[in-house]
Image (cartoon, rainbow, N blue to C red; front, side, top):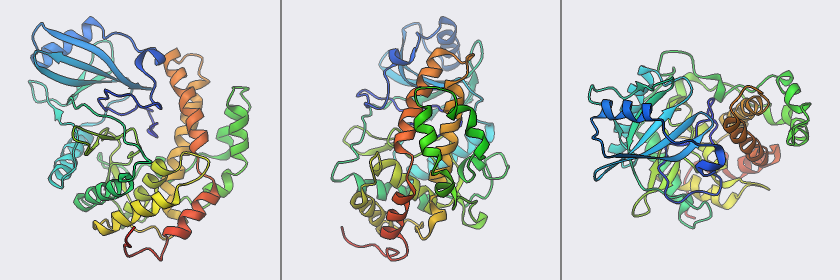
Length: 363
């Protein structure tokens, strides 16, 4: 599940599918159009021996696996608004920094004209990446918390300061503002299968959202902002690989850390506090700068999940949305309602990690 505004899932190039990710046929994925294949062949200089098959997809994004001769690529078709040129440049800079810090990711590849983003026939946009055989990481694996903590520390240590979005705008409110109470009325009263569960969760929304607030601009660095289990995968040899950098932008490191802790170690009915402690301690040992000290550090977690939930409810209830988009939204609503943190869980995590754990301890 991605908390992105457009709902696109990871650009991961999975061979083994995660149970949380529907196979292409389940979400109505189609064959690549001849026009799309022809455009890609022309742009990237491929020969006639190109074979294109459907890979993972999200609400507004599709990955196509491309085989041409001995080479394999991941062609990402973007249905929504594409990343800006400034965003692409920021992504390339951040991934170079991250690679230098030992973080692995699929390489972003330009076309023959040097473009990293090109228009697709009939609308949409295309990006190309190196294909990497990836598989899901087991959150319950013994080494997972320590590996994740070390990975996030490396990302934060190499990140530059960043007080505005890549295009120069103010930090995206998606990460620090929750929807107004009235924004939920249509969805809660819709009669959809999930509407009653939504209404039940909304009863605790004021308590959950009480501490959500913008971060101090002076504390912001460039962050990935979407490091959930579908975007951190195991590559050949088992090392962690980070994918889907499309959401990068300014965030407080403590807030991204808090979000990652819950993304990985709270899948209902409550948080795995021992795993959270181990990930947090590994992050501190590896020199990560973030420290969870108060309720506001959960702002990014809460705001992004609530904003994502509202967007997906809108897609699910939109009679003009494509059936495949509505089906994907229904799945994401079900998952988000299950994973939406309870205020008690945040308090438990804060009691465990806040203040007294500023110095790393051995697991």
